[in-house]
Length: 43
Image (cartoon, rainbow, N blue to C red):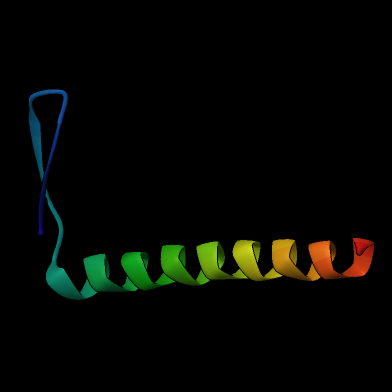
């Protein structure tokens, strides 16, 4: 995986990039699921 940031090229091995993406997605999923639970409790 190649990332362009401020004119610099950052090259990350695919398996590491995949691990980072999965980690971010699982954190985002946890955030949205806790928000949904909070809304249910308020109603």
